[in-house]
Length: 257
Image: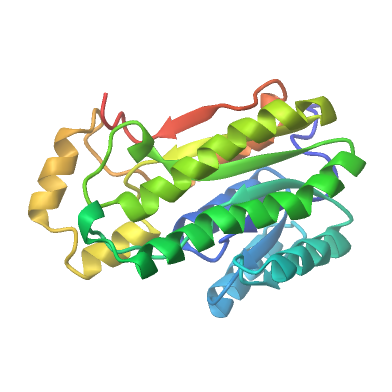
């Protein structure tokens, strides 16, 4: 009989109501994990996802919170633990819809919003989870980073730069918390047909010229699908990656090679 991929408890997906986060949560359910969905403003999307996961035979809970607020993140995490008995995985998929601007044209407000949400938000989640992970004999962090860490995408700095900070924190967690059987890894996300990509395409920000230029940098001449991010996240969080920490899986169709 095949060993279960996860211990008892749930994977808590921050940003689970978003386009990619939604698919990540579904992928965990498909792998047999119970799921706690963390969301900020998309209540209907979170509840719809919860219904789908419940129909798959997994236990699911829904939790609202602003990741920029330490107290709200702590309360969200505690509620997820209360609902499931244990949280074994934190998936960081939260992030705002960011403007596509050159570094020199960024405003302090844009920069602060990006850093507060992605960097301070992830730090809040880490601080909330670490005592629980230590007490329960281990746990796993999986962040959704950016393929732009490997090859800078012009005008996407408000997304790439905060995620690069989180990449450093992931390596630090792996180094310092490995002694507690706590792992930390990341999935570098390329252009995925979901979430921000679809919205910015609808707004006309990503036009035919942008598509042509980005396609030149891809080894695989197609856009990625959100479930492909989910598959990578599930692997990194599961016992199949039990000896993997401080690492990245680049899911970007070979962007920039």
